[in-house]
Length: 303
Ligand SMILES: [Zn+2]
Image (tube, rainbow, N blue to C red):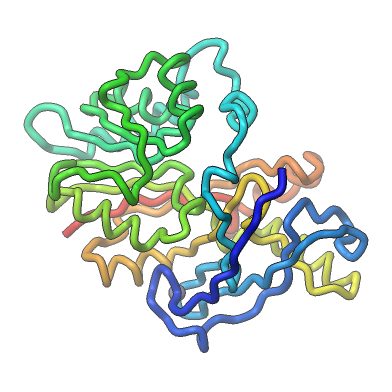
């Protein structure tokens, strides 16, 4: 499917507000899987930069499709290649929401919002953990799949993007961004919206790709050895359409602007499907020890 893009120069770092002088060029990224030798892969390329002030990684200029729906015009079953034969939440995911629930000291059920319901498993895990769950999802077929296969309450899960969602200020105790922020063109603006929706003392939980992932650095090094400047960061014009990678400082600096602090931050090692498992088994303990795993998980606390 051909998607047409317009390219927008980035005027300010989306998370910390730094000027382009602070952006450092990391290299070139193609609009498809780059294989072992990107010089032999045909495709359109964008420049990938990193903000020196907060470590955020992003394409500059930013490629924006004519319609965001162009990126996700596929059946939900195809995008979410998970096993939903049984509507059971993965145990580790359930444990995360159970642990988070215990941090809330509110009378009755904490009111929660799931941003980008997606596969629906997070919303289900939040319900199981004892949250009073609301949510929205912009992609119609994803929402439909989550309602149909997981039995989520239809009247609670709106068909909407974050730009159009209109919840009253200070109406939630908890906002969840599970694997969402890296897909949004304006993650800083979306966090500002979420902070507005939260009561003081409310929390945001998020999971995003880490800007310090060891395997990305190794792949970049491999491309350097071949005499090229390609990098493996982000995938702004191909699946899974990641636009950003984040560092701890991205949230510390953003929190100074928006009025939240980083309550906890963990780096998860994760599993990459493009690297040989034998090599990953070797690198996993290194990534665990040095905090250079694939995913960054954080809980943000509104002041
Ligand atoms: Zn920045």
